[in-house]
Image (cartoon, rainbow over all chains, first blue to last red; front, side):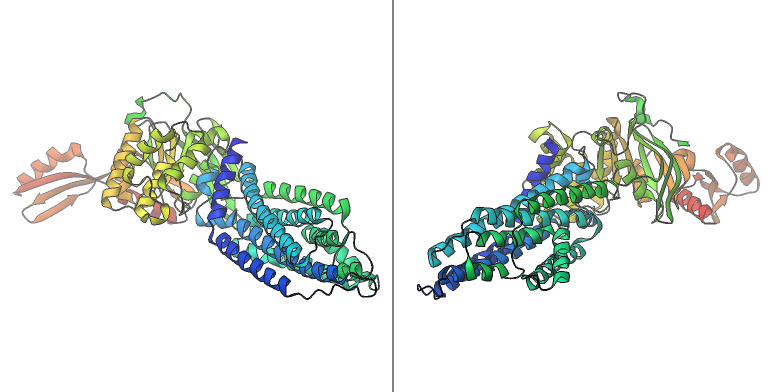
Length: 280
Length: 296
């Protein structure tokens, strides 16, 4: 395992030195600034409307939008940190000198993947926590299950990194980036289909959305994360938040975690197998 | 199998009897294209072998298979008796790829440190300093790769390949970015390594470099070994060149043993001899002949 940690340390430093990471930090700072500004401009009437908590509704919707933005940023970062991990780096001549050293290829992959996940997940966790704090300070609302929601968003990012690592074995950097973003888009599309069938009026769309959730468990985790935000709410607020921004919410429960774990193991296994057979 | 005979430095026999590199019946296909069609080579410790061939001959593929970067379709490749690509084999080799790049943000010292850790070398800063000095980069230890010239990066690549004191060095075009001074330094370094008993497989297009430094040559064309052996064995006699009053004249088919008779005959015919040289084929001629024969 020693070699894995050497690769991890190297990949971690490389990740943190990438320009895309620095640009992402700047954009995130801009986003959080604008989010603070937006939250402070939201007019929150204190009076209840037909017995519903309008202030919670407003706060949860705007926070839901922030969660989508954080999800998108995290996915982008995970993709950029892994798109060139194998074929892209091999084409540039970065990989060969490392691979001929006495370490197994799976150790190299694991070290790189771990570094990418560490950076992306820490980034998402910090941004999520910052958005949560801003929402609480400006709008006076914190979801009951914020930690669970944050964990699921972080897990979604890790799943994207694993998938991107697999396709990096076959595709060069740009092609891989485009492919993973398309998969991400497919997940969102599935979420929207599920949203249309929110009340069960379009069962075919609902079935399609379910299939897409299984194919793209990162989207499922994102939807489950949104679902966590409305746990403990009720009435119109729950229904409105249940529709959610960009894909609706579901109560994933333990199923989404179990499926994601199986999915990651299968994809990781396929990556190791593919990389072991890849000519460099 | 083409087995290369021992070179002068092979008296250093500390590595036992296993060949540094043993390639037997090596076949590699990329789809329907045959990159290597049954190659047999053996390189012994202390041998400096030049691997020559035109573009697409299969030289880099052969080198990469020896490193474990490319999987053979069939055949056997061993490094000191261990399967190529295995950890044991990887511990014994140093490799410099034709196309390589180190992250621009790493310094020369950091590149070597990273490879020391991956190679399990315990040489520490002493080894790093020694290697940088060996390739003429001792003043650039703290310099970032991104700020280095191509030549400096190539020198760093050679230093990286030497991390952990490999017993077999696989160099793919190691002098392509070096200036004449750098090439001379590289020749000196390779000669030192040979004297230390290190086996070197030098993949190069520069015949003059190979001729100057290698004691064995393997010429590959279209995936097959078309010529191999010691340089002096390959350099077939081309005749005797005699400088006469009328100019230089080449007497083909005549060897060194025939020179006295030739001189007697020419003098008897009234010629005045100003100089005489027994000619043998240059490596370039050997190479071109071998490649041309294969192409016919």
